[in-house]
Image 1: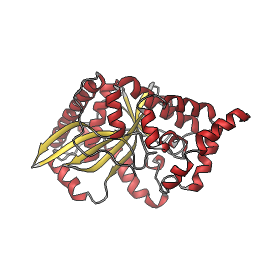
Image 2 (image 1 turned 45 degrees about the horizontal axis):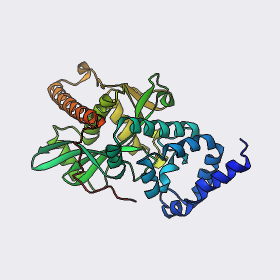
Image 3 (image 1 turned 90 degrees about the vertical axis):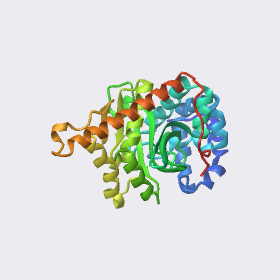
Image 4 (image 1 turned 120 degrees about the vertical axis):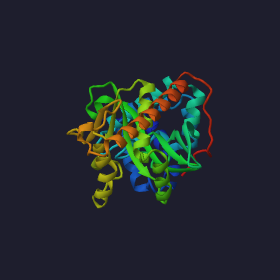
Length: 324
């Protein structure tokens, strides 16, 4: 691709000005990676111009000023999933934020970008279990928004997702919810056990996956995709066992098939494994867990629908999301 002098000058202004800020974040923006970000931006100047135009809208402009990386993270390798092209990554970023800007009020979108929105809360066993939604900030290339499970005031598990064009994951649907991160927080093992026991023996990853289906219902999205272990952004050969447990085994356990391209793809709602395949003695418990997850899905769908209607019911019961 040839870049003329005007484009080069504009690109310099776009990419070189924020570099000192990026270089401070060595964990995900090491200086030796910045040259590649600049090059990919130059090679995809048209797409980056569309991103910059979108991010001039309020409240995206505020998010970009407070976090200059926000506008460039789609240019990093393995953004959302391993193996996507820069054009695909750009289309995912643009689709997600165009969709959110069209669907949510400015106040709701601003709160998601800077704080938490509490979607659903359960009080059980003397503890408070809350599902919140916010902008993904730590490991911010692994998904745009996060659903988080809090035990009282502490996040113990999160699920990161992005609304992306269906063709990115070889789906015939116009758009899908792409799950790109499933992770328990370090040091939260006991709280995760507490949450699982209190929430009808539904583990946090399955609980948040049910909540995500509610978000999909509210947005009218009929398919969910998820990365397999080898396509997850942080996958390494040294951690293959852990990643396969967290992604492949979990998603297969929900009865979701894996595609030839390394994504798990399912209609919403997820039907789950046929009851006939469940061992004798486990069927009643399986039915109870599915009924509970269905309640979570419906509750999160109802709240998300109200949020999209602009109803002023959202609040931030937890501390604002901090910068890394």
